[in-house]
Amino acid sequence: MALIVHKYGGTSMGSTERIKSVAQRVAKWVRAGHQLVVVPSAMSGETNRLLGLARELMPQASTPEVLRELDAVAATGEQVSVGLLALALQAQGVPAVSYGGWQVPVRTDSAHTKARITSIDDKRVRADLAKGWVVIITGFQGIDEAGNVTTLGRGGSDTSAVAVAAALKADECLIYTDVDGVYTTDPRIVPQARRLNSISFEEMLEMASLGSKVLQIRSVEFAGKYRVPLRVLSSFTPWDLALEEEARSGTLITFEEDEKMEQAVVAGIAFNRDEAKISVIGVPDKPGIAYQILGPVADANIDIDVIIQNMSHSGRTDFSFTVHRNDYARTMEVLRQQVVPALAATDVVGDPKICKVSIVGIGMRSHVGVASKMFRTLSEEGINIQMITTSEIKTSVVIDEKYMELAVRALHKAFGLDEEQAAVGGLETR
Ligand code: ADP
Ligand code: ASP
Ligand code: MG
Image (cartoon, protein in one colour):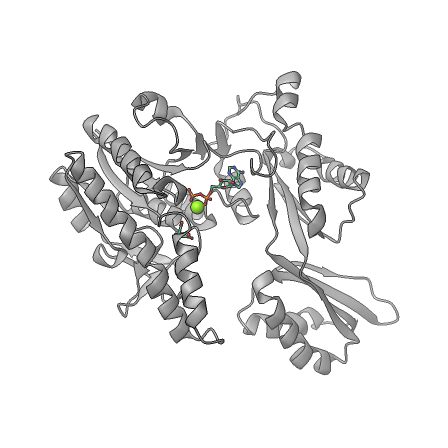
């Protein structure tokens, strides 16, 4: 008997039919003798619908009071899901109980709309499991010290599930979704993308942080910190698929680098169109300039991603960086009002229509020429690289958004990740 956490995403919970199928699948695991905790998302489209309603009515400024109420609204999607799933399980003859994050409780900090889980009390859940019940806990939501309902950011149910699995020291956390695992890149953009049998934790962390939304980045961080065995698999297989087969399907996130494994140098390609580029032109090239430009931006609580400072000409230089597209207007305002006058800069220019494309692979540590192959591939497609950033296991470029799909497809092919190529070249799917 094992303690297993299942997480079901929005599409997997998308209709009463789908919820019934989830209940049948969970019942199969219970009948095989396992203890089950299930963390579902809101039904697909529901969180968007709720936030849309809120936006129609909310004031312009995102004050803490406004963010609190956005969470109060958004958290209700998951509340409906857990209750419906508990009913569907009871209809299968399986005892089940649902809890909102506040009832467990799942404690978080007070950063409304992007709260972090700080602790999870396992007493109530363990007592129910000991009675032979299935426990269903809302994804995405928690409660802060002061008793306010919080949410964990979009895609946060993944993090709820992994955190619950960590708190309960579960044997495995299974993330059921609308694709049958983690692919070399988003299969919606590149139909030739291949499913990986396994991916290293480090690669998954980079893929998630660089834009692959199949797992929320914080869920991968949690899995790493607490060594939660994590698997991504399909909720669209027949519910009565043999349990042993289901348990081996999808993509396993591995913590040990397997020496014997046939490693492709590049494991996958991630992309993110949520960024915007800003350049401050003609700033004096002297010590402290980066701080003087980015300090006020950081003070406005805006995260900065890629940064470039150009070579100076006659004592002046240009300084460029990227921010989340939602923060673009606010960043431009901070720069125009505070930074340009203080530094006597010539101008501030920006481009919200850029994207970041990244290649990721632990094989990049031990192979040279990977980045240059990336640059050559993009140049052959006539794609101009605006910014570059690298780390040990990834290289990212900032390019014009309109070339994003072309760049991802070209790189996918160039690094031998396409399905047919893999078959011809004899590359193993890992
Ligand atoms: P859920 O509602 O189950 O949480 P998400 O929409 O959040 O599902 O995540 C699954 C989606 O992630 C897939 O439908 C796919 O389009 C997208 N995706 C992006 N990158 C990848 C990748 N590398 N592998 C698999 N899916 C990916
Ligand atoms: N329902 C939330 C969202 O749409 C959380 C999740 O699905 O993971 O972002
Ligand atoms: Mg998701």
